Length: 151
Image (tube, rainbow, N blue to C red):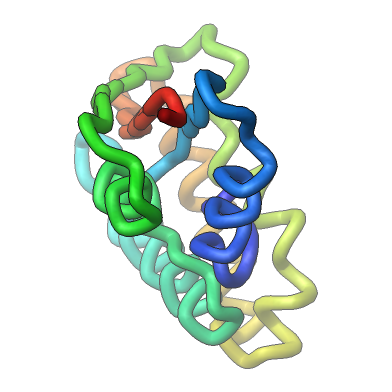
């Protein structure tokens, strides 16, 4: 959730504030900087950059996953636990196409904010979809978990 909203720090502060003593604050977030495919595809890299540009313009941290542990420590939680996860989405995995699906959800906003021209956006998405149709394409997404019990 935090990877999709402006000012994620404020949300985490509020989460900690409403948490009772002894309760757990646990987060699981993606990191757009670690979403890759192999063989490499320039359209994939361009769309990842467009997502990062969109995030920057809108005050969203597309790399929040890697910051979770630090974020929990900065709000006063100690002994924070942290777990990186790597997901491989093979040809039959339901989340393999999450990237072009998510891009489609943001298309109009990205175009309105001039993050990318419509023709380039559409060509990138078509290229990515074609690449994902190839069973030889490896799709890798990184996620991070961080948690801590409130004293």
